[in-house]
Length: 363
Ligand SMILES: [Zn+2]
Ligand SMILES: [Zn+2]
Ligand SMILES: [Zn+2]
Image 1: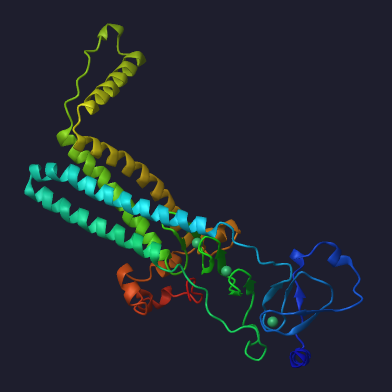
Image 2: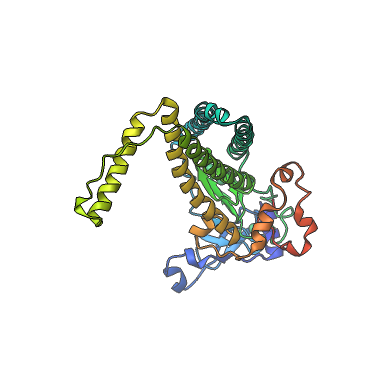
């Protein structure tokens, strides 16, 4: 360590206390002695003009928090169990929707015409495969590991090499400024957006596109299911019977209310006469409409964040992004399937004016 100390004086690194994190007395106290501290990033001994719990190394740029303790990740296994249960329940729900929809709707569709049956079979197959595939990709792919960097020894760590890096006590390794530690995944995630319990995984740099593709696929599927169940329901719904209206009271608001009441009553009576296939169709219609509305809002919010050039966590931390359509072009880069297998064949290579100097998802 003696050599390290002498090296630290040769390069004369100056540590900068991070004022925002200091209590007020640190600003006004007169300093009589220097404080000797060690930077975790380059291992150099630094001299602080006053005691500071958080300081920035003048050589490598790493931030050291002397008060950061290793907080135990309680209930980690419980979170993993919850995530796995959610994933299993969602997969079973998807299978139920696909199988239930096919069982309830396809006999009716084929009875209308073979063209209807074959057309809807193709659409159902494509949407089912797309949804299950994007769900598996978002759920089981790694959400994004932070870049590996050299740290811990002075000659190896260059000047400014760890600019604004912090040290993750839970992973025991450097954490880049764009990374966050997820307690549910038990690791640091690059460009973490949020931890989604429904896919049992974080949404980060590596699977954000899979997640958006999943949302688009599910929203399209729910829209298709609601239209298809309405269409099939129209063909199999029992005839609705109404009580004859008494028109002696006139055609005022009272008449309108009674008419609406009669229609609802007639509909409820006809539901009682529905076959099990019809009841499954009603359930699929209600659940697909409600799920579609909720996920459309989530998709819209996600696209807005991408347009603004930030993630959900940035948004919570008042992160400032740059609003630009180029963010969306850069995010989707090239056709979805090609980007996974041919990461270097991005469409943006052919659109030089769309390239930005700072890649948001650069690893
Ligand atoms: Zn340092
Ligand atoms: Zn971590
Ligand atoms: Zn996570």
